[in-house]
Amino acid sequence: MRLKDKVILVTGSYTGIGRAIARRCVNEGAKVVLNGLREELGQELLQELGTDNAVHLTIDITEEHAPEKLIEKAIDSFGKLDAVVNNAAIVASSNIDTTTVPYLERMLAVNTVAPFAIIQTALPELKKTKGCVVNIGSINSWSGEPNLLAYSISKGALMTMSRNLGDSLMRDHGVRVNQINPGWVLTENEKINQRKQGKVEDWYEKLPNVFAPAKRIFYPEEIAEGAVYLLSDACGPVSGQVLELEQFPMIGRNPPKEWEGSHL
Image (tube, rainbow, N blue to C red; front, side, top):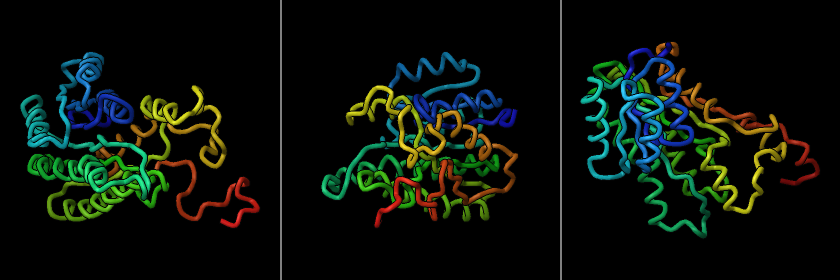
């Protein structure tokens, strides 16, 4: 029970990685505040986890006063707040031609500004518990694919924020901040997104080695295991760090055979 009696807010926890993290937190003894956009999914997960272990608040994290409402939900329900997992995000394609300024501003609002606002609002409570923050980023934080331009910009900004706050908040308040950068994860939404782009039903079973040397991509539960480590006392004073959960090195990768003869 690595998270026994901890109270953890997990945004975007009705589906995908966030749902896996919420489930794992409860299995490890924590109480969780669930958040998402589809009320029926929140109710479904709440019933699964049990009302003794979880509460939920269906709200867009960019709404005015959303951070305050989420923190208040934790305090009113469980009396304290030990950790925040900023997982809620927009994942959408765009490139230099299709990224309008309003589109980029919306991406930044959800993926970067709202997590900042939640951390800022939660800080007085996290200072009391010597708590922590785990931001869920992406390997696209480092530069990203051409067709994930706006998304990559937002996750790169989130990573800089994680490193900056991981230093200053630990030093000044004893609050740890870290980030997980997952690689390609097989969530239900990703299955839908890929099918919308013309992929076959079982596209994830036929991935080229360049993308999946392990012959598969990640499961949400595997990302959740990394989050539990960073949320737990077992990681000690680790702060300002980025945990890359990928199956190949992002920098200095050995060229795959598919690249042989290429001049790239």
